[in-house]
Image 1: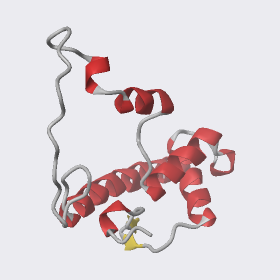
Image 2: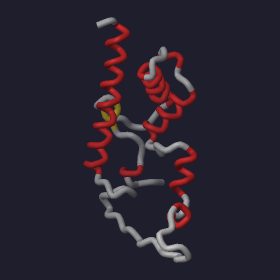
Image 3: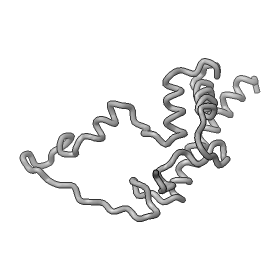
Amino acid sequence: MNTNPLHEEAMIIHGTGIGMVTRGMVRERAAELAAINGRMPHEASKSDWEEAKRELTGGSELDENQTLLESAPESDRWNPIPGSPGHEAPVAFGDNEDENGRSVGERLFEEGVDEAGHDQMLAGVRKISLGD
């Protein structure tokens, strides 16, 4: 069981704290993404569902090909000195940091900015559909 809260799912949606992500939350987020992309909410595509799930569960923002490339050793992607094996220096993260070195405050700030952007796009779509 993961006891580190920095490695868990999204913490806020539309400025409200959330607990466990449910299928209904993913469905609602996918509908919002469909609306933002110019489709009716009930026309959410598979990619809308995947993005919604990724956003809410803290999954990777990279697609499968990018994830595969990122998981390859640095030496396979770029070799500054051909024939040199090189090595990666170990990184020790503090108890208050996630795998990217972000604190809880930094993560909440970034998540808040992302959520605010999503809310603004959704508000713009709603304004256009209401004819304001």
